[in-house]
Image (tube, rainbow, N blue to C red; front, top):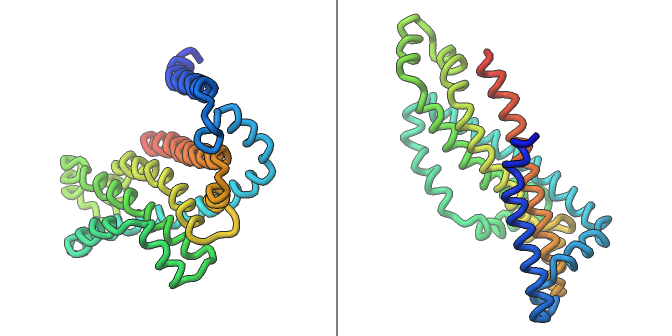
Amino acid sequence: MRSWWSLIWPPVGAVLFFLVLWQGAVWLWDIEPYILPAPSSIGLEMVSGSPVLLNHTLATLRLTLIGFLIGTGTGIVISLALHLIPMLRKALYPLLILSQNVPTIALAPLLMIWFGFGMLPKIIVITLVCFFPVAVAALDGLARTDRTMLNYMKMTGAGTWQIFTKLELPHALPSIFSGLRIAATYSVMGAVIGEWIGADRGIGYYMMLQRAGYRTDRVFVAILIIVLLSLLMVALIALLEKRLIRWSRKS
């Protein structure tokens, strides 16, 4: 318990100190709420608007989870295909890198034109931001397999599939989860970007409405919810990593 508290109190203390400075600066210089609201005003607005915020948050969370699962699944499949087929890797890996040079915010309007304003273009946006870190991390993990163990398994007559399932994949799990943690944070922002372009609910939609009305306090509330959703996604991945890698090491 003491060890856990020693890890968490420094960042919590830093955040509280920053909030006190923020609150004091707003009071001292009498800053207009539409420019910079006080943390107390943001907290009160979050509590008073909780029923509406809950509906928007659940919509964004649902979209995030669906897009994250599809995006990470796509990234893992791509990495496995490129790893198992060297010629395919030589042909497609450079294109995989180039695909990340196109800004998602610029591509999103095209997706809305091509696929309408339903859920599909938003899921594509999240998939595009999620699959790359997972694919690259998985490829890197698979490439770092212990060469001594690899040569030993080949000498004992192990096939490609046996080597992959018994050695390469378990060895690559830490790298894969590193990519999953990055994708988890990207997935929330991908959902928000999709909602900016076209939606009738969600935190991104809520943020656009409040920005148009110069409700800066509500914009900060939306930002806080986005941060909390990102932390929740990362925590879920960390929990899954702890369970799965422990099982893998025992195996």
